[in-house]
Length: 191
Image (cartoon, rainbow, N blue to C red):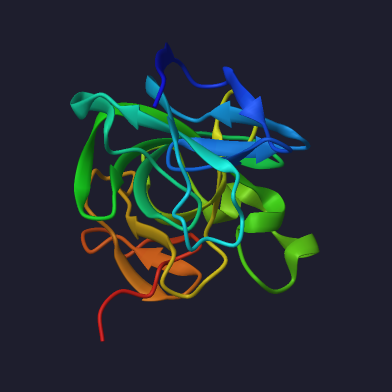
């Protein structure tokens, strides 16, 4: 077993020679580190059909909790643009992360139907708290996130009056103080 310190994006092997384990991913024929930590080569189990050794990255304890494809995350919308919204990922599952991770919700990942009719400014506002699913590691700058399920979307939003709004439908939230409604991609919560 060999070890070496690596950071996200470092090339840690070739897919023709090794299998990607925890903390690693394959892009084309190259295996990359997806977190900061120690690179290890682990021998395959004797009964395994694929006898390639496994390359994995074991993260530092402080960085152990990272978003992975399929993870449900909670984040704060920081910026809304015409084709995407920027999000700071604050929690993975029910646990807070050590440091914020950047995420992007692209226009085509807001909802499952009528994708071409999505207006990002009617789905999210800066400051909204959203529940989303990690689609992929995305590009070098941010994770790609999706809210294209009923239970995903805005879970908390503040009105212009500074009050926490109440969802009144899957596309609207209302200020309990002023009664004013605002458009959102609302997450179905509970039941």
